[in-house]
Image 1 (spheres, rainbow, N blue to C red):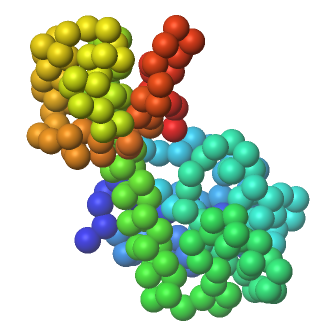
Image 2: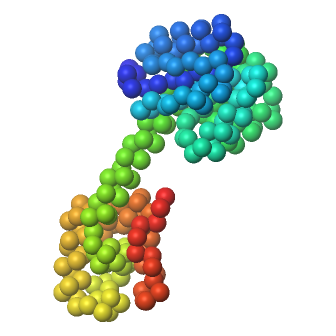
Image 3: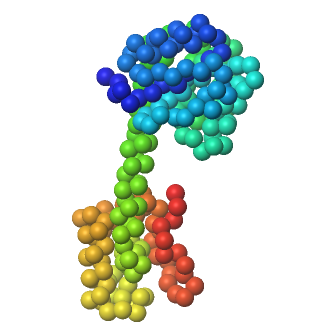
Length: 221
């Protein structure tokens, strides 16, 4: 059963098609937002929660592929399902290469559209879940001191306590203390789990250490 937070945006310049699609998708339990122009959609604000876009390929002014490119330029991640009555191979290939979820021909069967919508929303739901997970990990990393972050990066590089101590010019006992703090703050039960968490947050393993090494912060992702 669809969640009330799942939103399907529909952009089509044909009023009758727009109305029919909105009725079909709404009857399936999804929240629906309709637009008769691509520009109107761009001027709107995306609602929170899983979203997807059902988009007509050919429209006056800004067409479907133009809108898809504009979304990409703005850094907006949104699963797109294209609808067209004038489907051609080059357009479908371009749309798919740009990340379109599906390319359906009008008149589209209701079952096929709803299946594509469900798949698109599930993908966006998974993306949002992964995004929340990364943010949680990054917040944990922000609780680490600069020295603890150094130790973390040596640990995930496979360095032993003795080796890390030599690299950082501190005692092995101090390394063990910092390592225990890192494991606790990161809520990691093993080095393998710590490595997985660091990788998801974009923290690179230490390759070298010295006065010129400035890479002590997580690498943005």
